[in-house]
Image 1 (cartoon, rainbow, N blue to C red):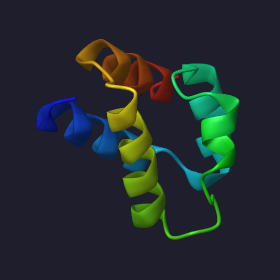
Image 2 (cartoon, rainbow, N blue to C red):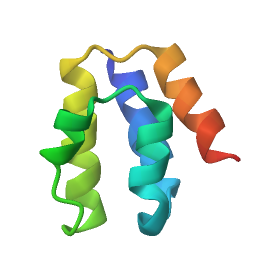
Image 3 (cartoon, one colour):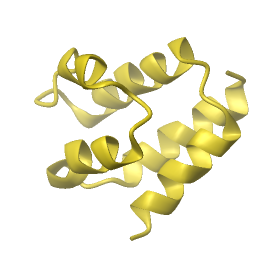
Amino acid sequence: MDETVAEFIRRTILKIPMNEMMTILKVWDFLSENQLQTINFRQRKECLVQDLVGLCEEKCASIDDAALLDIICKF
Protein backbone atom coordinates (compact mmCIF):
# COMPACT_ATOMS: atom_id res chain seq x y z
CA MET A 1 0.00 0.00 0.00
CA ASP A 2 1.52 3.32 -0.93
CA GLU A 3 1.77 6.34 1.33
CA THR A 4 -1.02 8.24 -0.46
CA VAL A 5 -3.53 5.45 0.18
CA ALA A 6 -2.43 5.18 3.81
CA GLU A 7 -2.88 8.92 4.31
CA PHE A 8 -6.30 8.88 2.62
CA ILE A 9 -7.45 6.05 4.88
CA ARG A 10 -6.01 7.82 7.94
CA ARG A 11 -7.84 11.06 7.16
CA THR A 12 -11.07 9.23 6.40
CA ILE A 13 -10.98 7.28 9.66
CA LEU A 14 -10.28 10.48 11.62
CA LYS A 15 -13.57 11.90 10.28
CA ILE A 16 -15.60 8.98 11.66
CA PRO A 17 -17.25 9.68 15.04
CA MET A 18 -16.06 7.17 17.65
CA ASN A 19 -19.61 6.01 18.37
CA GLU A 20 -20.00 5.03 14.68
CA MET A 21 -16.50 3.61 14.13
CA MET A 22 -17.21 -0.12 14.52
CA THR A 23 -20.42 0.05 12.50
CA ILE A 24 -18.75 1.82 9.59
CA LEU A 25 -15.75 -0.51 9.62
CA LYS A 26 -18.07 -3.53 9.56
CA VAL A 27 -20.07 -2.08 6.66
CA TRP A 28 -16.78 -1.40 4.82
CA ASP A 29 -16.03 -5.12 5.20
CA PHE A 30 -12.34 -4.74 4.32
CA LEU A 31 -11.02 -5.89 7.69
CA SER A 32 -12.12 -9.22 9.09
CA GLU A 33 -14.02 -9.60 12.34
CA ASN A 34 -10.89 -11.14 13.89
CA GLN A 35 -8.78 -8.16 12.83
CA LEU A 36 -11.32 -5.72 14.27
CA GLN A 37 -11.31 -7.64 17.55
CA THR A 38 -7.56 -7.07 17.90
CA ILE A 39 -8.12 -3.30 18.01
CA ASN A 40 -8.63 -1.48 21.30
CA PHE A 41 -11.46 0.94 20.54
CA ARG A 42 -11.06 2.57 23.98
CA GLN A 43 -7.67 4.12 23.17
CA ARG A 44 -7.07 7.63 21.88
CA LYS A 45 -8.32 8.13 18.35
CA GLU A 46 -4.83 8.85 16.95
CA CYS A 47 -3.57 5.50 18.28
CA LEU A 48 -6.67 3.74 17.00
CA VAL A 49 -6.13 5.22 13.53
CA GLN A 50 -2.49 4.07 13.50
CA ASP A 51 -3.57 0.53 14.39
CA LEU A 52 -6.27 0.49 11.71
CA VAL A 53 -3.94 1.88 9.03
CA GLY A 54 -1.40 -0.77 10.00
CA LEU A 55 -3.99 -3.50 9.42
CA CYS A 56 -4.90 -1.94 6.07
CA GLU A 57 -1.22 -1.92 5.09
CA GLU A 58 -0.94 -5.62 5.98
CA LYS A 59 -3.89 -6.36 3.67
CA CYS A 60 -2.44 -4.11 0.91
CA ALA A 61 -5.42 -1.77 0.71
CA SER A 62 -5.88 -0.12 -2.67
CA ILE A 63 -7.14 3.34 -3.55
CA ASP A 64 -10.46 1.65 -4.45
CA ASP A 65 -10.71 0.22 -0.91
CA ALA A 66 -9.97 3.65 0.54
CA ALA A 67 -12.51 5.32 -1.74
CA LEU A 68 -15.19 2.84 -0.67
CA LEU A 69 -14.53 3.69 2.99
CA ASP A 70 -14.82 7.38 2.15
CA ILE A 71 -18.14 6.82 0.36
CA ILE A 72 -19.52 4.82 3.29
CA CYS A 73 -18.52 7.61 5.69
CA LYS A 74 -20.49 10.18 3.72
CA PHE A 75 -23.80 8.35 4.26
